[in-house]
Amino acid sequence: MIECIVAELKLQKTYLPSPLASIYLGGGTPSLLPTLYLNQILDAIAAEFTILPNAEITLEANPDDIYPSQIKSWKASGINRLSIGIQSFQDADLTWMNRAHNAEQALSVIPIAQESGITDISIDLMYGGPTLTNGNWLLNLQTAFNFGVPHLSCYALTVEPKTALAHQINKGKIPDIDLNKQAEHFNILVAQTAAAGFEQYEISNFAQPEKRSKHNSSYWKGKHYLGIGPSAHSYNGVSRQWNISNNNIYCKQIKNGTLPFEIEWLTVAQKINEYIMTALRTLEGIHLETLNSIAGGEIATAVVAESFKYIKQGMLVKSDQFLYLSNSGKFYADGIAAHLFRT
View 1 (cartoon, rainbow, N blue to C red):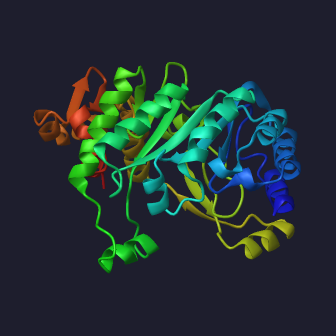
View 2: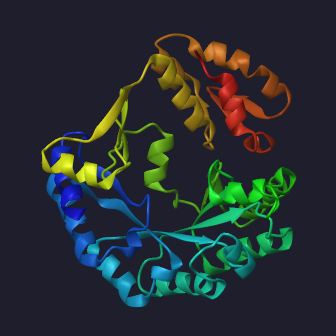
């Protein structure tokens, strides 16, 4: 697989313009990867692309994979940011989520990373689950603040169809998601992070000053990106493509010098809707001039007209050339965006 990833990098070396501002190793559990192989991937990226000296290089890691010598090894490889899947600092939540780590490990890994030289850390936290009380949600957030974590990615628990979780809920073995509870947790999250000096720069992402994720921000700003490996997605402004998910077929085609992807050429309406969906999730919101530039016309006027009822309800705010969500509107972001979509 490592050989195929390296080979795909060579085949895709013209997809993105250099220099690169960010590299993100994720979409799975790259913290399981031996450092030797991690270095092969990073070396291949450096061989095919120019990387900015201050590029953000993030590794996703599970708490049970983190220990001092491993952190030092990652740092020596060039990793300068960690995204750690903490999810909760409470054993009851972690057991319910069927996570491999426990609360003791969750509490220990952040100081280990900081003491080993990586202080640019993001942690994932989950809210809205049946085992998480308001009090423990407050405690989870305060724990993150106490550790000095500069970036939080916080997500409401969702139930995907045809998963083990969905099956258990359908059978009545565990309770279904309580949307009122999720709304309470979201409001607690927004209030507590603001009080702690965090900026909610995207609906699910909160950062201390100057600690926004460069990589994730590029997605929301519509910048071009290249995904490498099975199931990876890429975007270059005019098309979106995704690699096949089957590992064996992926490697077989790569070894034959063929890129194993499907592609979708974006229509003007799709470009508009993607911009609305991603921009509306951000602190700055939709830039109306940008919207017009995508459509080549006065599409912003129509979008503002469609947004009037949400402005009247206090869910959307129009300020000069921007249209953005109020705090009360953030919980309904996807529905509002869908209403503004063009056909």
